[in-house]
Image (cartoon, rainbow, N blue to C red; front, side):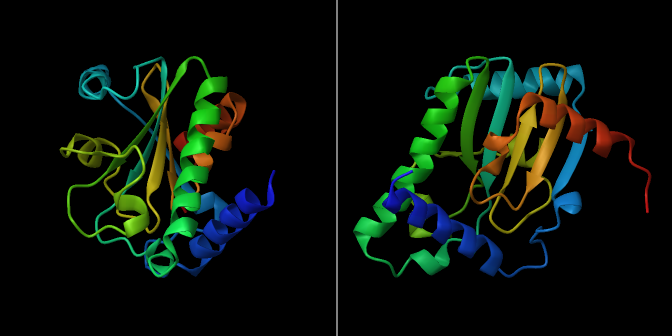
Length: 189
C-alpha cells in the first residue's frame, strides 16, 4: 500500500473514533445487527436498485448509506482540495477494487435526502440520493459515519453501524453468515 493511501485510511480511521454522537458504534458486538426481509420487501428493494444506472443488480447487495447532518467527515472540510480529492479517490478505488473481485456482489453508495453533507461526501463520489425506501427498509437508525448493509439473496441482511471506511466490504461470505446467524438468534440482555 502506498504511503498516501495509508495516510488517507489512517486519517479516516482517526475521524471514525473522533466522531461524537449518541449513535456512534465502536463496540464490535453492538456495531452489528441482522434481520430478514420478506420476499415482497426484497422484490421492492431489487426494483428500486435496478433504477440505479451505475451498478448492475447481482445476487448479493452491499449498500453504504450516509445520513444528512452527519458530522463524521466535517474535520476534513478545512483540508486542502488535493488532500480531499485523495480521500475521495482512495474511498472510491477501494470500492472499485472490491467490486472487481466479487462477481456476484453489487456495491451501492447512497445518502439520505438533504443538503447538509460534508464537502468530502457531497461531491466526487458515486453516491446516489435515496428517495426514502432504503432509509425506511434498512437504515432506520441514524448513525454517526453512516451504516452499511449486506443483503443476501434470501433476504437475510447484516447491518454494520457507524461504518465510515465501508468496512462491510472486508467481510467474507463466511463472516457475514456467521454474524447474521449470531445476531438473529442472540437472546435479549
